[in-house]
Length: 477
Image (cartoon, rainbow, N blue to C red):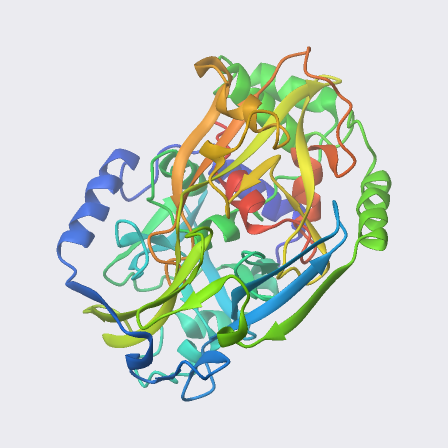
């Protein structure tokens, strides 16, 4: 059967509203993940930068790079921008030009679409094992530069026919840490029986979203992929009829409103063309100039035997690790990693306008962005300590931090990409505000419905990874 987009939307929506999976109750998945963690042998230790096995670096080198020329490198850059004000700085950054696979296999089981996820360990994860996509592999991984095993299920994506593809997009990763990094986010559907290997499990989209309300259970790559699952377009009148007749969470007001914002294509404050004009205007007047600088020449950064760090001990560090994990394609290796100095915060503020929830969306410049700005959460503070920010200095931060329990729709710690970042977790939040919250916004912010955000997700490089992570966690039931 060839799926059109409407049928794919129906499959995603039904799965997002199906609490119970066919293979394991949601509560039992937490225990299952703990069991996977307990039986995995992990040994990680820090080593001097010059002693990273398989990598090239000395105090005279301009970068940290793999001897094969593959995987990624740590380089220095100088950044200049005029938005929102003239600013210039230098920093280390990860340069990983390869486009990898972030792929999920899905299958309709007893009428409900299930997602095949893997209990995968990453050396940088706070709690090691988290739920990852079916396939999570860089090009260097799946071409076996590491001389290890080929990733499981790779052939399903390489040989996928067009009629199997439900989602296929190039999406960015952290623009403040990666230089122009993108991965192929792809969801395919299979009809034949496939072998479910150890550490893999079938889950509904609703089950994944429920687990996202817990700390550090679903990894960043899974969040990125499932964020692209859209549910179609309905008029407000049509949704109200559906909601009245059958929606299971109609007694949970905020979840019903979130679903309405996702499905309803009318009643938005701004048209799609107006939003395009908004972001085009910002890209036209904002400059982002990035030039390479040797790591040994970075201003305000210190290179010693064990790490590269900012002289004021801010932002992040670059460290080196020796790693042994017994169930990976390669079981023993060394690599550099980026270690944050502090936990960050990413939050959307949402308000009902014209009877549909709208989100305050930020057009944000980051040093590694491919096209100057991307849509970001209302609040995104990752490189500085948000707890030390003076009241009123960061737009909307005070509103998020002072929100009452009744205003908090979502609040959980989520790990960032555990293959490149070490113990990096940020607080993700969604805050509902009332009618007294002003509709007027600063110049680089705009109101958008969830349906509009999901429409932009169909295109490359519009929503950053932090915004996609929050969208992935939106509960509907």
